[in-house]
Length: 395
Ligand SMILES: *Cc1c(COP(=O)(O)O)cnc(C)c1O
Image (cartoon, rainbow, N blue to C red; front, side, top):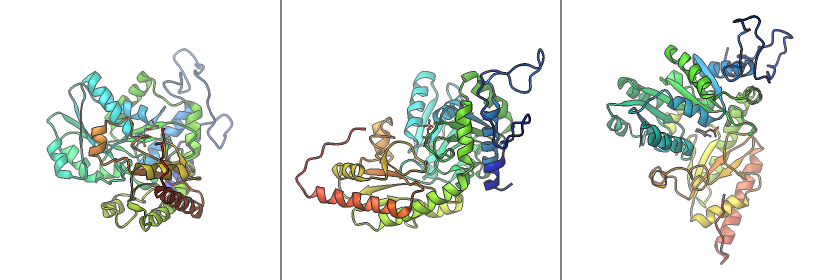
């Protein structure tokens, strides 16, 4: 099956009693035994649930992995992945990773002595130099959040494997439609299904996918023992969202491409970070590694924080909100929102200044999106020449 067919059919047929075409929501905590010691494959929903299994089989098929587990949030998936390591292990992480990832890593290094360090993974020799004898994994996120840097998954996986370490890829920003890390050597894939996989901003969820036989049982054990599994209803919603992944991703990209081109030629804009633009420093790598450029971008304005705040306040369709990957367009200020939990020093080093604005471009009519940004930029400009004092927004 090709990917678009897989999104609709993989894993979904779970009802042999009535042959429902859509997977039912098995909203039950427990399952009646056939006889002592005999079940129909399920005994307790923390351990497994048919609606969750349907989603897990679907995501595993989309990523081309051996096994997937659907968990409560993207952070739960990262939490489970961290339990593949022990005290004294070192994880080398990309320096501009998701803010919540950095916060969890910091907590685990303090609590459990897992060593974490950060490196700019666009610089391959810096990566090699940052390896330690106890490095057990490279933590890769590409495109990065919010600067949309692209790193080379194949080369980084080779570096990891030559060091007897794992390559772990957070594939949230592109979804398996646009990027397939297992084909590029990755061992574990992380998703926040909250984003493009569900796509409708009505669930928080996560998934962890593995591609080595020795990880399959370990993953099941961890998700069950840690109690991380996603609820049947959330799984059902994500499964439903995935059915339209391909047409949504095509529209997200089409719109993002037009918005990026509009912003790039606008005199008030200093810089646009969108991998689909030929001006993006990693455009060639993105073309090679990805099947598309996705719907995320960020940009910097000419001017300071006041101008940034005015733009954020002035958009009417783009709502100020955290999160991304839903059908509606969102605008966000990473330094005070998504990346506020990141250590300030690390944030500065990664280049996430207070002038960066991030967009999650939705699937509305692109003309409305461009007009919205145009009027927001216009109104930001008008006020910037007046004496009006603006108080910074608090979010
Ligand atoms: C949102 C996000 C996460 C965390 O996912 P939650 O579902 O919010 O817990 C992890 N990684 C990336 C890249 C994300 O965008």
